Amino acid sequence: MKYTKQQNVSRVQIDTGIEQIMMVTAAGTGVIVQKYDAFNPTMLQEMMLNEVTKESISYGYEMKREDYDKKLVSGETIRVLKAVLEYRGEYEIYEIAAHGRKDEGILIMTMNMDLGVDDGGADMIQLMWNSLKIK
Image 1 (cartoon, rainbow, N blue to C red):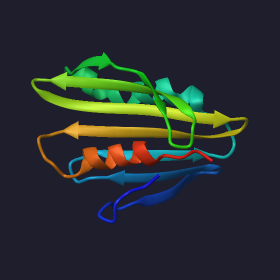
Image 2: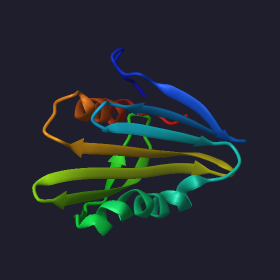
Image 3: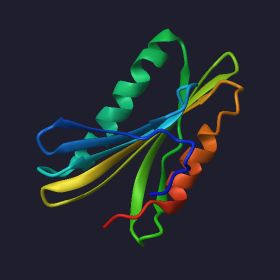
Image 4: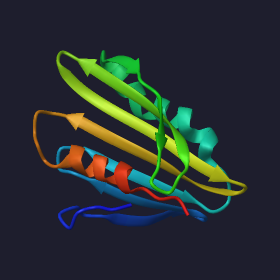
């Protein structure tokens, strides 16, 4: 995937066989990619979406699901689980996607915090989706 020089990228080994790459703006908009070397993470999509939205829903945000299929530049089509949360005109948009093979794969999460601040976060997410290649 591509990203701009302005984006700070952090990379960390979360656990044995799990590497995480993260880019987040000051306003909280960001991209997280987790690479799994020991199992196929596709089963984690729904659980991850539930985990990242449950606090906002508990607070009072209304959630609307807008799942879709995304064709990547590398040719694969992946299912993206999309949750749009709204509370009094404020929006949080989460997307979770995964691609897996036998005992390996990636999990992708985007978080778009629509706080009325143009910090380049939406462009960062769009660039990631437009350039993501799965090898």
